[in-house]
Image (cartoon, helix red, strand yellow):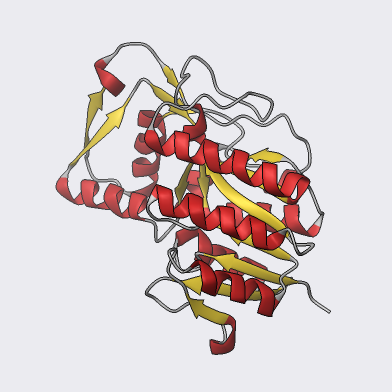
Length: 271
């Protein structure tokens, strides 16, 4: 019998990729805010992040073996939602896979960060994600798995649409002093499926295994998308000349080579 998987936020870019990837390996259920998802009617549920009681009823009724949270929304509401979710999960044996972000390190741009580094957040978003990570780990211990991700791209992603609009307009702003890695929705879905199926625990930094400046990534992506002349406006992050290191490095060796890619390989996947 397939294990039950509940995807919270299954109608977003990452959620859709997870539904598509996981359907052959799990009995998948999902939630959406406004747009129904590609699941049987009886396995999809409209859920507002403020509706904690409905969430609790879903966990009790579905009894999922694993829950993935890729929810979005107002920070305080998200924090309260995840607190109540974790409390409800304390009565189960479910594992929670929580999507976090490189922004938990946005208080220190002097280096790229690994899973062993302690988060240093400065932005409201980074501080919220850090607090939620700690909350879930405190309540669920090893049953809270943290998945930190960089910028996510996809063939239908807003980021790629913005690049294509820039191509049409003939100009794109880029940052030459921001060094980072990237990830696609499809590769992320494959990586997380592997993590769940192999019962891997702890903190994961997912993303390309190498680093590029943001300008280099965008310019190479555009070069693969079109032969049209495009003007790149070189900008400096925070108007400062120094390099900002904003990459997620991984010291883990859990993933097979077929699920580990470079930034250039991700660019090829997008075109």
